[in-house]
Image (tube, rainbow, N blue to C red; front, side, top):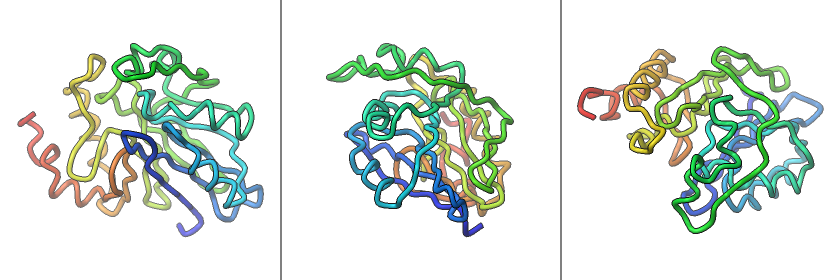
Amino acid sequence: MATLRVIGMPLGAYQTNAFVVWDRDDASKGCWIIDPGERPARLIERVRAEGLVPDAVLFTHAHVDHIAGLTEVLAAFGELPRFAHASEHEWFGEPALNLSEWGDRPVSVAAPTGAIADGEVLRRGGLEFLVQHLPGHSPGGCSFRCAAAGVAIVGDTLFAGSIGRVDFPTSDPNAMRASLARLMEWPDATTVHAGHGPATTIGRERATNPFIVHPDSW
């Protein structure tokens, strides 16, 4: 579906991919910002350059590298609705949970204003996105998939050639295996925008990703 536009850009020390998502045919020029990581000036500039109007911020999960730029985004665009899985709402204000206490600067940002849940359908202009709850890397990990466009944003569940870490205190390797199995139900041609690194496809990962090919080896 040519009307879907997704712009991703790596932000901050961890080069975490932040995304701007909109429907090119939507006259309102409304957009989502997904996972605004640290030092989001380039993201803010790009939104303005495209003439877009953010109307919500969505989070695939609430680790520090995916939430650290929220304060700057709200300063730039005003008090936007913010959505994350309910299991991680507390994390936005708690450095011990969002992992920022491990770094140089504890991070606490505004809490979500609403929750997203497995099976929920979100509408962006004339497009529909299915929310899929994918615990493992973190308990509240979620993806946003537009089946009509063959595109999904999956956070740190799946990377090109790898997967998100499962050795954090709140990670669960068995839950991650189940979440990856759910992703492998998607068509091979589905383009996957990951939380780190380049985009890939389900077919490529199904055939070559060692964590998918040999799920019992980790």
